[in-house]
Image (tube, rainbow, N blue to C red):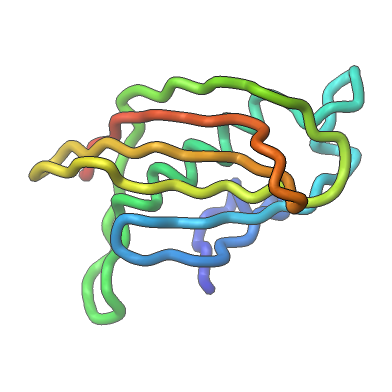
Length: 125
């Protein structure tokens, strides 16, 4: 699946699933993703959740023009640390208007451990 996002691609993030109202990303944890304590960096956790929630509201069908948006607000709850393996970010639209939409997201380990959650507001451009 085409990601078309140079920043996420540079981190090794893969877009696994993207349908109207939902998006899923995966990323194998590498040494460059860790903070000084050897844990997945909090900024990267936020990036993955922002991408999953944001993309969830921007899906266009194959014959439609790409839809873009910006994050208006994003709240993250950090619940557990990851040090290795693969993380999975899922985003789901919970409510959508003409230009604004609301989404929630989860970041889990490949073993199913909940690492972080997010709620955000996004604006289509």
